[in-house]
Length: 272
Image (cartoon, rainbow, N blue to C red):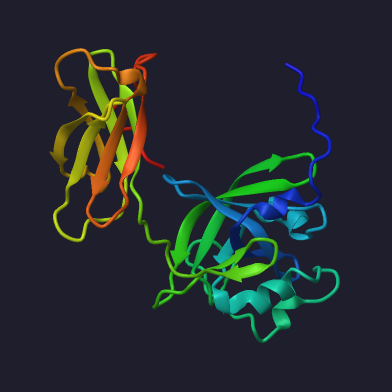
């Protein structure tokens, strides 16, 4: 199938992405090169894989295939100046490791040292290289990690570099509901932790203003709600009905009842 190349996209749309700032260390014949990469991610859990995406201007892009390994430090907020510096100059211009802001930690598995001061440093063995039209992704298996003695806050890239504020506090229940072929309704909901009893209160709201209680229920394994519930007996105008889900200390959530349609998926999908 052919695809039409999109035109008229806003300039530098990729800056809408928010990602961790990483510092990559890679060996070469004369020593170590370090550079920053704002596209640094974990891309697999077991085994743990980390990836960095590099532009054609990056000298590290030419070094990585021969080195076969790299270290990746996910930066803390105290490393904004360092990340800016090592991303501003190339290996051919200056030996960036002479900066007194760079201190290396001793690797345990690979030969490439890692930059200290971050949230975590990862020793990676190169497993795959993926070429895109402009950029190249290097995927490494994490074979060792180095954590600081105390927690640090991350440095992130969203256009400029940013520090993070406090965690988002959930204040509203979000719910969805689906009518199943057996006549039950499957309800899913998330919301903040209840300050007292761990209870989700469900109600069926009919278009004529009638309300049917569907009971109080505890959270599931992951602290959210997912359950199949029987509906009240008798013919009900479900096409315009809604499900209301209440949680202590939060605004209630509402869901339209979707028709059963195709066969439902498993009750609990694997989580990423």
